[in-house]
Image (cartoon, rainbow, N blue to C red):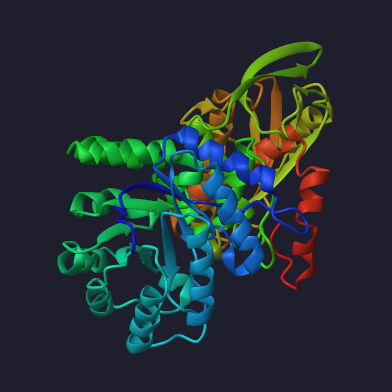
Length: 485
């Protein structure tokens, strides 16, 4: 007899921390406790964000067992799907024996069954186990789409209690709500469209970003339950960029975010890599978004500059030193964007009286293409910043891009870095700016140069990449495409 299970609320698509050869059980427990503190209603171990396809049967069982023991009042929906029906039944039975509340079962993948095969897969599973089943549609990963017609038929089975949709397709969600919501629950699995899904009638969500900002999603869920839709929209807008970054990078971005927050979960199992699934650019953007949301603590950092100490409230990660000194010369580099609008920034930061300050004066006097960065007409950015184009300008259109949106992006990045306490005022900067001769989208050029400059400044100040960072991603350089910094 299957126990009743009401699928609603905020669930975390739980990540799985790994050591070199096994599951990091202590780190897993820490993540679960963190989720509990966020006020979420449940956790989902061994789903897509849990990297279940990179785990053995025994590893999956162990993670589910730990999740059940450490949940302490949170519901546990175990990810038990697999590429074949027999494997799925075996994993689902194992999870049921461990005491989970329900099982999340992804569509069979790789061999891509049709509608009849999908129906038989889930029907056979439902008849073979005594645990509530939640269907799972995520075509971007599986390569197959679970038709609403199949879901409508499966909704008649007693043991099938809901469907998680991670297609990001609102028209599909609306059709599901129309066809099956009286019989089973529909929950959102795509972080970017949670509010419209809840407002339309979805009963909850299972999200990767809930590992990081579960408390925000709980506030959104509660607001919608009270029909405070404007409040829900405001909150989602605060985390929308982070949601977008997580949707584009998946578990790699989720783990990067947790590591930045001081919740150490390590890296993903191969073949998922930083610098690939998650670009270095977007990794830095995740950090910036977490800072804005107050998820990374602000600490007092001391800048030692020209014989003086300057205290600053710096939003720091573990890689940030408590004292930042030796401002004779600091170098930073970053690349953002792609195609003709790509931005590559290579900069130097130093004291006015040091070698960077001396070079600043020489270049300003001798290089006719060098330009002092300005925030607005007749207002130099502080600290003084010199922009040097790295590509020869052959026409006025290219020059207007370099000295227009590119320099504006650099200037704004410098000003914001000072305002955020990242960059002391008593320095000078020399910024080498690459703008492609074919660049034409001025807003994109501005945005990419702004982000690249922000990232390069922080890397210079923090002395990054560190040896640990280089070691962590050393294998990424073995492939033939060596154009990512």
